[in-house]
Image (cartoon, rainbow, N blue to C red; front, side, top):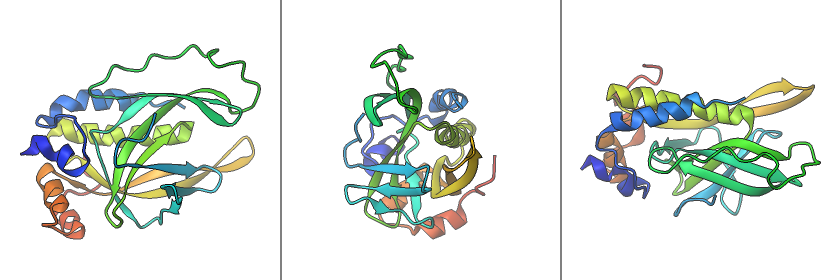
Length: 224
C-alpha cells in the first residue's frame, strides 16, 4: 500500500516503497546548498524576501505563520532560473529522483544582463499541502538564503529516509530577518512541527486521524 502514498495524497509518481533508495538522491540535493510550471492540482506559492510574507494561489492568499503544511518529499526539484528585466526568462527544474539533472546553463544565455538581480540562479522547488485549507502549493525559490533553507529541509528528510523513520515533515512557514549590504531582508524558514510515516500520512489523507494527534504520537521534530 505504501507505494501508492504519493498518488493518494499528492498525485505524484515517485515510487516510495523503499525510502532508503531515495535517500541518496535527496542527500545529493541537500548538499547542493549554494549561497517550470506548477504541478497539477497545485497553486503557485511565493515568498517575498522584502516583506517576509508567503502568498499562494491566484488570489494571493496570505499564509498565516501558524498554518500547517505537509511537505511532499517525493516532489523535490532543483535546477536553474534565469531573470531578465525583473521577470523570469527561463525556468529549468527537474525532480531529484527520477529526472535527469539540469545542466548548469551558459551564464551568457539570454544575456546581456544589465540590471542588478538578473542572470541565472540556482533554484529548488517542492509541493506542500495545507492541513488547514483545501489547497496544495508549489513553492519555488532561487534566493541564496531560500535555497539554503530548502536544502536544510531536504537534508533532514534524507537522513530520516536513510534511517527508515518517519520522513514526511509537517511544517509551519516562518521567516528570519537578516541584513545584507546594508539592506534588511527575510529568508524563508520551514519550521518542522513533526514527522509522519507512510501509514500516518495515508490515515490523515483518508480522514481517519487528526493531524494534532498524529504529531503528538509521532517522532520528536528535533530527533535525528
